[in-house]
Amino acid sequence: MRIDQPVEVASGSGGIEVTWTFRPRNNGRKSKDDPSHKTRDVEPGNIPRVSRLMALAIKFDGLVRGGEVRDYADIARLGYVTRARITQIMNLLNLAPDIQEGILFLPRTVKGRDPIRERDVRPIAAVPHWHRQRKMWKKLVRDRIPSRQ
Image (cartoon, rainbow, N blue to C red; front, side, top):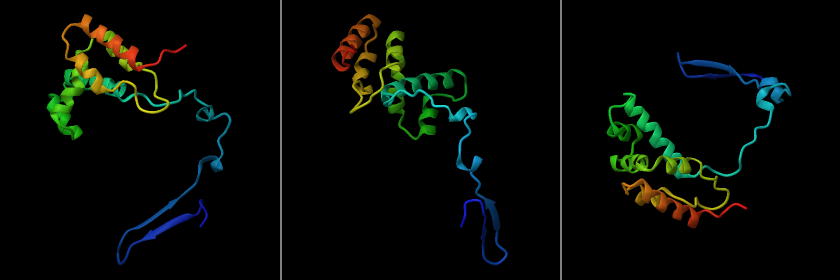
């Protein structure tokens, strides 16, 4: 069977008949004028999980404030996670704004595990004073992320 031939699927007596054709665009070749053909500069590595969770907490907060969901319990039900886990994620919003920004812009993980995990940030988020949070954050970053030179 060639790719550009129609394919027919038939079911038994009085059933359903479906016909479709597989045709690759441009015979499988990309045009040089096609914008998707141009290479994108993508940084190597993975975005740290704690960065993704921080972004998720900000998004969830926006959903609740905007009235799209009633409360965090609704988010937990919709996401098939426990309310306790949603609370852990939402507690990231208790961090000082500059720490939240630092988490969002952590360097990508190229090799091995993420140097800073959400579990490491939980004790910082539990401290109500932003000045103390900043001291704890600086120590964590200094200990876990190698300096770039």
